[in-house]
Length: 300
Figure 1 (cartoon, rainbow, N blue to C red):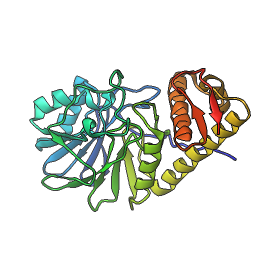
Figure 2: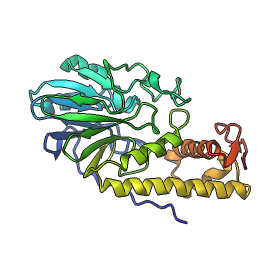
Figure 3: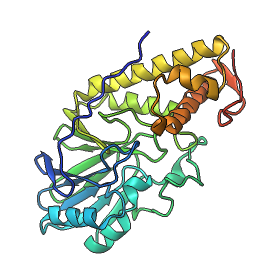
């Protein structure tokens, strides 16, 4: 059984220069490239008359200046966060001050079933509280655009995808990307939520997803199906290994993630923990503490 995926890492852009992704949709890439952010955080400007900014990215003066320049005199009325991770939210406060816009996001305090995230995690923008709290199915409406919010937890408990009305576009945040799979890191991330959110996105009749990092996701339903299969294959591989006696996070890591780049070893270990937790939730294994790299998982 194979779980290999083919990623699209081709991305043509220049920092500070907006790219037209569709009518009324511009993309700017923030200069915060890294192993988990790829070329940087994608910021989108939506609208022809007034503008919504999706994910302002890091607190970077040059990137903020590029956003304001790309608005080209049009009022920025909405600032929307797909989720409160700092590479998406740190730039919100300064942009709000410069533009006078209202901010929109899912309320993290509404997250239930223990998936409320890690209150100590440094990568979470704990200080960001939106002016307007957005729930699943809510519409965010501007002068010449409309976005429907889909609550898609998994990568983060407050994660939103945003459907651009009548344009065949879904802003998919960090939930579905072309360049890599999403990191699901407990307790901030939860694999059962992630899988359900992928199933939700399968229902979208979209021509493309515009993600939080990397280039556009073309043929998104095919990609989402592939990611669902990938996760299921990975969990079967973990279950087979546990049944064969390789049953701790530390010993499973090199078996499940072969030829692993050391730069993303930490992220791989967190996703492995998320898979183990998901298997335990389904009653397939027992694991007392997946956060302990040497805690043994026992098949049931």
